[in-house]
Image (cartoon, rainbow, N blue to C red; front, side, top):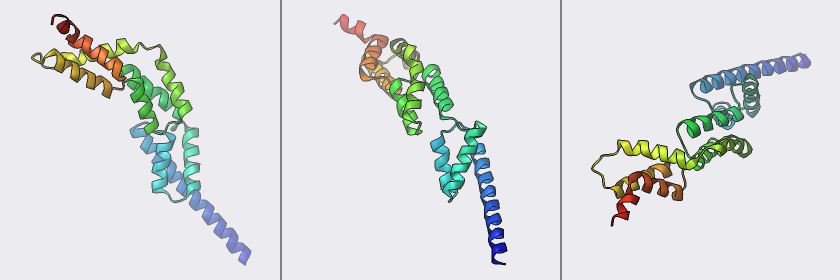
Length: 178
């Protein structure tokens, strides 16, 4: 009789685990539909929602096998969108990928696609577009300060941002006449 109770208990436990894993996978799929997420982000969400670490690990494994979670694709698409389309600098992209807990080797591989991009030209294009939206009555020094801050927020280093801000604002031409 005791043996039958153990078997029933084991079957019930296994059924409960399968139900919990199914719920966790469904939650992960809904979550990744709204926006792409990394394995670490989904794992943290599932850990907050489900107490059993084995259920979370099994759900993450299933989500990866379904293609709903893939850090390599996530990092590549993140760099494509924010680096190539929006013009973010290498520093900002690296910080964002770290914040999303993308493994360093995957992040470096994704950031390598920016290697062929001309940072000076990209920053200059961004600064020109931004300068066009600034009030025309601003002094060149004020325009340069605003452009510099804008480029630094976008992830460009101080030196490059300074050089581009001075060139685009016309501050260099203005100072030559002093």
